[in-house]
Length: 174
View 1 (cartoon, rainbow, N blue to C red):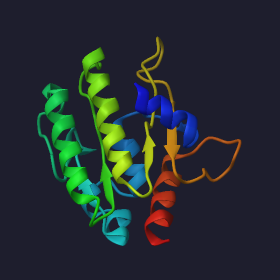
View 2: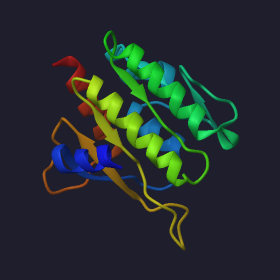
View 3: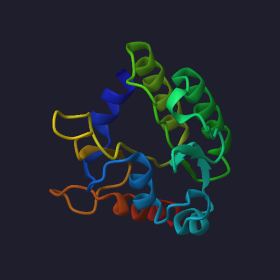
């Protein structure tokens, strides 16, 4: 986990607060401003390429999968990483890693390596999780992480999913 630990110490960081219901598709819809990632205002305005973003029980864009629940984490990471590294020199990229099952140690090691490679190739980045681990009384905790080269909107407040989309657009347009 050396890359993620390094990023947590050196990047701008904060807490993402997602309102219920806590589902990946809804969180991404809030970030992108649309339930359809491929034609969202953020994607159209930025010219970003979409890679593996959750939408309606599957992922869409490059590396898309209709079998979200049974997807192999190694195959997902390999495809997303290769695609992002290929696109980054030419396009802004909006990419997701979904991990359909609870990640194992080897999955987390691969994730750490993939994140390190992708962030190293990017001029600017936003890395976030919209929500946290499952809790006893909730399917997931409503708080996730925010790591970025961009400051969050308010220094001592949580970042909302909609603000992540706005920050991305400012990065692309500057």
